[in-house]
Length: 207
Image (cartoon, rainbow, N blue to C red):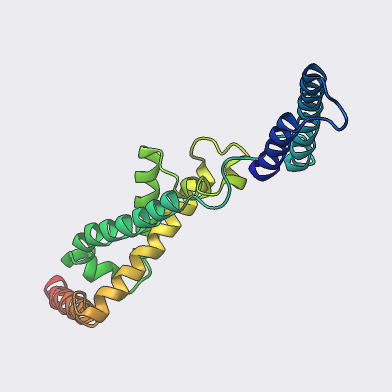
C-alpha cells in the first residue's frame, strides 16, 4: 500500500504547484489546486477501500496473526518426552534389577505393562497430557479449543513414555550402560537356585 500512496501524494503535490492553463488570476489557480487536492483525497480513499477489500479473506474476518507451527512449544514437548523417558527408565531400573523381580518376572512380559501403569498413575496425578500439549503447538488445531487433559490423552501419553523408555533402554544397551544378556543370565541363575532349593526341601518334607 505504501507505493501507490506515494505516487498519489506526488501527483497531488504536482497539481497543487502547477497553475491551470489560460488562467491569469491567482485566485483561480488556488481554487483549481484545492479542487485537485479534494479529488485526489477522494481517489485515495477509494483506492484504500479497494486494497482493504482485496486483502480481507473471503469469510470477512481479518487474517490471523498466527500461522504455521509454534516451534518452541513443539521442541519443549519433545524435550519433555525425552526427559520423562530417561526418568522412567532410570527409576524403573531399580525395580527391574531387584533380585526377586529378576527371579520371578524377568523375561515374562511384565516390564512394559508395569511401566504403562506407573506412567499413567503419575500423569493422572499431575494432570499431564503430552498429546494435548503437542497439539497446542499447531494454531489450526488450537483453534478448536483444546481443553484440559483428557483420559485418552493421558493413556496415549503413558504409552508414549513406555515406548520412549524402551528406546532409551536399547540405546543404553548399545552403549554398554545396560546389559540384557547379564540380566538374563542372572534370571536363569536365580531360577536354577530356586529350583535346587525346592528340590532339596522336598526330600526333607517326605522324611
